Image (cartoon, rainbow, N blue to C red):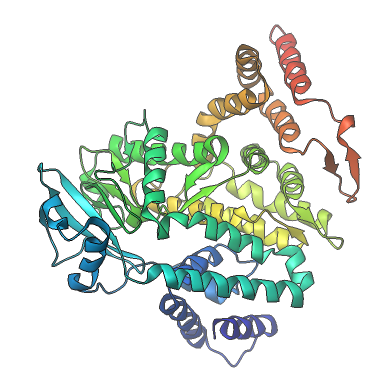
Length: 485
């Protein structure tokens, strides 16, 4: 049913059916969104990712898909109680001094969350998986994989530009913690380490040993950003939370290569006098090192207002088809990038900009990395959260503030001598013209060592490329020689 609806909408968008009014179009889009919600959690998450793929989904669907969320009508506690009994035993009530079974804190298609107090008086949130969800998710995965396989066989030209099986693979990997709360607890412990040192950001603690279907964690104070009143927070709190969230995002994408894949406003809790709590770590993303380095270079190109450089970086990160229009893509980026440089969140949605690059790449016959859809979703979710609190923040400005840390971290991966990396990168970033030097070095870091793609779709042996070590040393020497001029 969903496939037919999408295909029909795409046909109408291509042929410009003038008989349909805008209201009819919205109703059609709403029907598809409601179909996704009724089909279950995987389809909801897939729809969220599709909302960041205007190259794949017709424009009429984008806005409606962007409204997808996991909120559903809660079921009575007596439906959820058997899960607690199966996971913790018949004496599970002894674990709690009290538990509010009347009104869940949250209800989603995968789980419900209840407010509780442990026997030692610690406030807690108890997350319980809905009965039968695992089987439904396994069946949905199998159906989606078969559908993707059919698309690959029946539409090879489409698959050459949009690798649907790979995109689904990224989604399935990201959702591991949604079906097994022991994995989500592990994600939370990792995230606690990653947020150490952040003044305005933290992650809830895992309070009891998690089971596959029950997770007991500390209770986040306040309310979600979605319902919070920004006026109740001080200016320092608002900007501090926004900056810390962006910094965690940049480090997660480019250094840790591990990030919260669903940081929508409902998953960030704020309260005056408290750090923001980033909750629900069931969905996390991971980025390969070559992709993260290329993304650093892409942002450097945006910050430097270099559309041609962005086009080259994006093309090298993906796979141009034999019919790719690389010159046209360069023209597209030259027009797009000036709109993004130094813009604030109030003026620009960077997640949308990222997907705009994706759209242009697809239309020009360039296949992009499948993880870009998940990155775009995370970018867009987080921007929406921060925009509610502090829309004046500039993404490129905060990226610049984190550039030294990012560059040094990348150099550490490449050089065994840490002091040499520190010296080279500090000189690089401090000296005039360091942005261009940084982009060139990152280009060397991002390219595979064996081959490099040229615009003519030919390859050059990696032996002709200077080593990364040599590039760093050479850049440091050049910048050092210029310091006295």
